Image 1 (cartoon, rainbow, N blue to C red):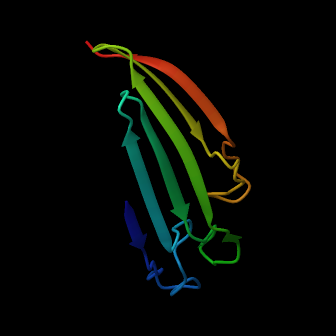
Image 2 (cartoon, rainbow, N blue to C red):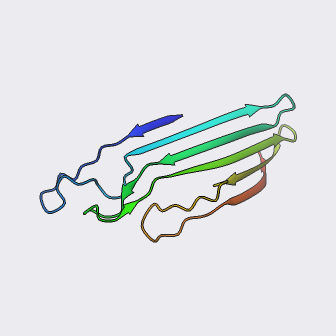
Length: 116
C-alpha cells in the first residue's frame, strides 16, 4: 500500500504563478492485497485512487478524481506453467487522465505463463 499527497505549485513567473501544475493529482493511493489458498491458487485485489487535478496550467479545466479496482488470479499447473487471469477496472469506471482523451473501460485477460 502507498499514499502520496502532492502539493504542486507553478513557480514560473507569469499568469499561472501559484496555480497547481497540470495533470498532477493532489492525492494518489494504491493498495494490493493477495491471498494464496491452500490449494495454491493466488488471488489479489488492487485498488488505485487518483484525486482531482486540472487539465491545463490556468486550472480552468478540472479533472475529477477516480478509483479503479482490479482483480487477479493465478494458479501454478506445475513448476513451469502457470495459468493466470485478471479483470481491470471491474466497475467500468469512466475517468479522465487528460481532458477528452479516451481510457480503457473494463477489460478481461487470461493467459499461460512459462518459466524456464
